[in-house]
Length: 402
Image (cartoon, rainbow, N blue to C red; front, side, top):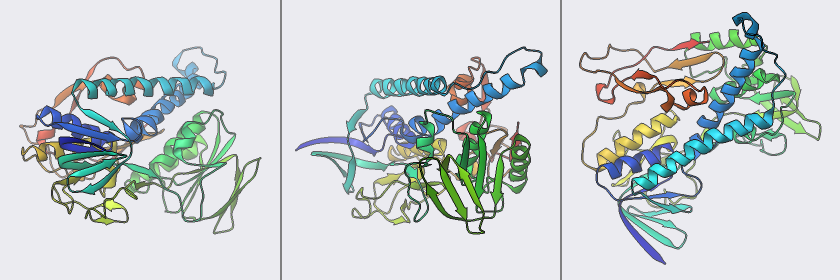
């Protein structure tokens, strides 16, 4: 049995984990980063990045259909899903290669394997014991389902939807939140008949009602069907497709059922509670400085109650690294974190608009191509203003755009 010792051990190499690792080494700490899969986590490999690539392919398909109104003569001859997937995979591969290079260049030690927290200073990875003066839990999330609804066959999650090697004719989507409307938008652009089933009264129910209604109007115009305020009862499947039954007696036939009912914290079986870390329904409880109930153990990203957003995890990872280094950073508040639902239309929102940014908060600038949505759209290397983290300003309000 081998042992490795670090100033900081990060359990999980997704957005929050690698951000914490990178910032910690910048601040002079030695870092061990434990990851059982690929660096980058869900966002890079199974979420944000590949879905943005699909959304761009969908946008190109829509623009091609409407090219004549822009004075451009283009013949739309369908969607080649094999080439769409190749494009998506190339985007992911490029980002992954860049991340691997960055981690290596910064001198972060990557420990491959599934880690288990065994004490306030120890993570066990197979027969390796990895110790750290501080530990950061960043194990991410998984696709939820409903009680009694098994994933398999023609009942799929967003991860399997990304890997489809064909375009279905008709899809039912269980859940009208962010994941559901993003895939609905992509598939509709690819010519698929889409039916969304949402138990709450509106699509994207976590947005302001005005935004939800704008989505609904736009989706009706696009021919995306949806049923609101109805509950799922059961699904049956055979070689031909699925039949979805609702509690009100309505049934829908489709080629596939996409289960998009949110994501849960990936914390089970990792030793958190046994090590004294308090959880609630799987989420790790922290104080405002993201320290858990065990001193010296912190948590970031999707396992912390609140918005499950990659850039939230990233910001929390940076915060925790600075906290460990004794820099006393400004507390990360969800209210300051913008969120975007990528579809057609696209919504963008923050929690509220409470005050104007202070005069001293000058914007910083970054290349437009540093964002994946810009990279997938082959955007020019221009710059755009972004809020300075030190400004601590309230951002908002909500909006939707087409």
